[in-house]
Image (cartoon, rainbow over all chains, first blue to last red):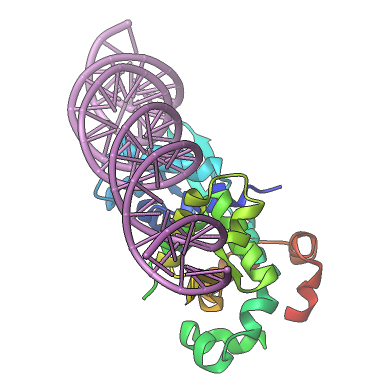
Length: 111
Length: 111
DNA sequence: CCGTTAATTAACACTTGCGCGAAATAAAGA
DNA sequence: TCTTTATTTCGCGCAAGTGTTAATTAACGG
């Protein structure tokens, strides 16, 4: 259903990754707010948002002259699902306490 | 530590994603075995493998004239870790039974 | 040694991605 | 309705990515 390479391609740019993480943190935001701290022009941001949207990572809501963007939880879940599908491989091969806990201190909840 | 955009960029190509998944499934394989079903030339495969290796997704073991490649579990775990860091967002926003279980029937182990 | 096999690097063509400034759209407001 | 504001699309260069074939490097085996 989802085109995984396209999803990864959308995340392969640091600007886009930052945009997505900002939307995750702050919730729905208009294009203007996303352009502000970005360091590149508004047209560039607009195109990055389009790529994220085409990959299904964000959604757009139109209201008057503003376009409000939100991160799409389902897309994140799908990436998580991909790693989970290979979990037996990477989890079995690691020293879990040393490696996974170093990545994320909240890991306990999952064991 | 890890450059997440670079990791995603390495996965953004369907050939590379297939190579990685094959290594995860089959374990360590020489370059020749990876070229076989790929549909593109050996040099092209060789360069894809280089990109995967530079991104830390696979490792190389040299033995005589063969180069054996393996998937790197830690890299997979790091991607998983990234989704986990945003888990409160996407998990909280979803109807878990409908959406997550549809993605992966093994999900129960995690609840 | 010499030829074969495994794999990579080099050279070249072509496509795609990303930035910018200018122009186009479209809704609001005076 | 004319102007302002928000945002996107267009047109253009330039850097990067991907595929091909040819050439190179390295290890084996007779």
